[in-house]
Length: 162
Image (cartoon, rainbow, N blue to C red; front, side, top):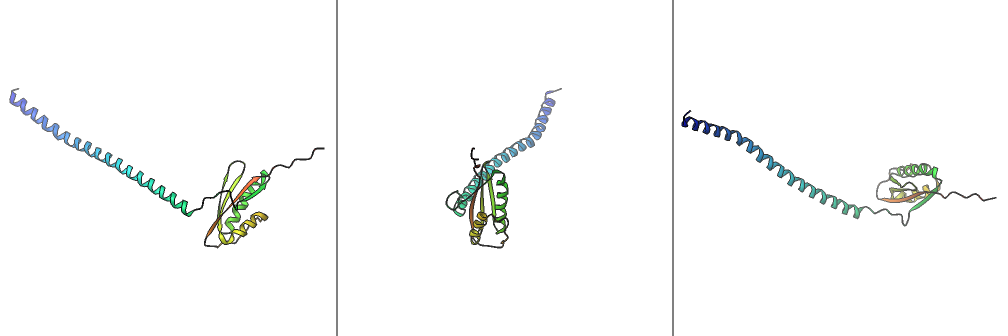
């Protein structure tokens, strides 16, 4: 082959290689740009989510009172085998008054936080104290108040020795 023909083949091979490499280069550049944009978007979303979480926590701290076993908390002592029945009864009383109740069991005691209408707070407290099984006075609307009930096992009575 003569030099001119070899030169033409090399030029054609370079043009074909360039034509094939150009789309590949564009794909790589586009993928790199999208990956960079994705990272920036994730960072912005994370920042927004954190700001939203902090805002909701602040709002909850202002609006919702923090329940504590302090003033006004009711304590009910029962035998260990009656704890579950008492829990269900307290939840049923709260629902019957148009409220809600949630509980937390730590293995020994059960803490119930009932959210009942403020006009029915006294009725709820008296019903829990007196052992009322069921109550149906739902339909109250308006301000709600939180009532805490701590259900704990009573100490077993010691039998006198003979």
